Length: 137
Image (cartoon, rainbow, N blue to C red; front, side, top):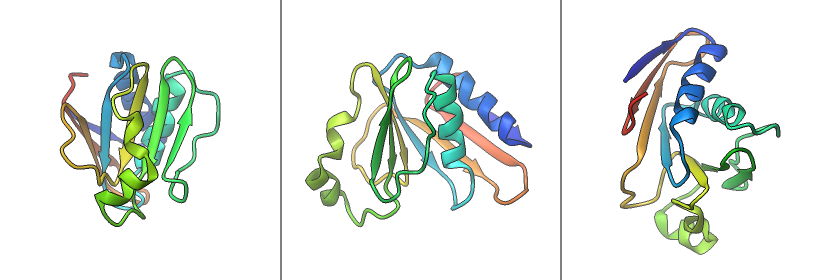
């Protein structure tokens, strides 16, 4: 499915549609250029999952978790150099966890199956195009 978003609230609306479909155990891969809105999308997803904490990019911690209707595991792998580093850090243990949803920016995990793939295009003040594959919204 493809969505055109002209504002942060439009992006949050798409994220909310996705949140209503989640049951736990899902892995969501976010892709797009720097500044495209991957973390903004994650903030909207967190809000729709009933998470009241401030969601920030885990660029320097690699993963942050938040508790809501489902636990959200938010990964940012921009600084990860290769997949072996992920296993040394123990980051794979939350993948597909029952009662949780993993959102991964800049994925470096190999061989993930049954993922929801979200690509965000656009930057700056331009409208965003959000392409969703792997789930019907």
